[in-house]
Amino acid sequence: MAHVATLILLLPLVGFVFVLANGANLKERFVGVVATGVVAISFVLSVVAFILLLHQKNREITVHLFNWIPVGSLHVPAALLVDPLSITMCLFVTGISALIHLYSIGYMHDDKDYRKFFLYLNLFVFSMLLLVLANNLVLTFVGWEGVGVCSYWLVGYYFEKDSAASAGKKAFLYNRIGDIGLLIAMFLLFHNAHTLTYLGIFHVAGSLSPTVATLTVLALLLAATGKSAQIPLFNWLPDAMEGPTPVSALIHAATMVTAGVYLLVRMSPVLTMSPDGRAILGAAPVVRNLYFANGSSGHGVMHAPALGALLAEIIVDGRATSLDVSPLRPDRFGDSDARRTAELL
Image (cartoon, rainbow, N blue to C red; front, side, top):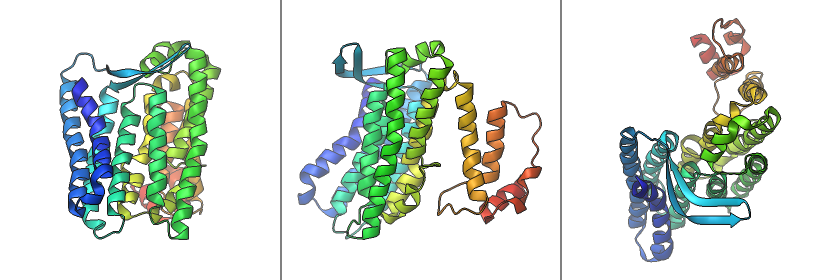
């Protein structure tokens, strides 16, 4: 399992380094095949890891790579956490990304920066895999920042256009605001839990005070709103369409916008210690859906107002004994997608 997990992570990085070192001497199609092939192999290995994990009694496996940051009481290893959540995310990231890479071979044909485009894609996939496989928040933050800088390069790929250059900077700055939340959460957790490894945090999560847990959840929510393009940090996502179409698919649908969701799910033991944090988290989609449903334009942001509001009500109340869908009448919503959702309900 250790070798499989390590290869899942490193193969996209190997593709990046290979194309970086030899790209100028390689034919266009060969560059695309190499970049796509390493991601496809990562997907196959993710399937293998998933099958192996099904037959494990202990489904939380730590793969230690090397000692990384030993500073005073702070000991952060470079290590991977292989569990059902991380492997599920690996399947999702590598599977969708492999298809996007494959599509890009033809879509980007004859582009003057063809090789550079595949460099960015491979580095993006490596960063996303590092984010989901890391066994501690510091290593996750490295992947988090790697995804952010790759999105800046990809969204602003056609930087000769002022609109594309502006969109790239917008994505970069909005995500940096969200990153402040992740840093605050890390400081809070290390000060109170004295560790930044996930398993260590989970072990002491029950001893966190409600105040610390709530502040941590709010900080994590700020980080998630930046990376997953939620209110109030969602305005960068519509402009991400300035990049090539495969970039829009990679960022909008496949990987980057799921990073915030992954972070909250990963830190769920801390969320359970904060009823107020869970209530705010449940209210967030209601605010977003009301914003879009009452005539404000989402400019391409995907949403389902009625369904989101209904699910948030269940989350906040903690029960589903009496669901009144009368407030979800079709005439309450301002766009066709929302009306169709309300009609189905």
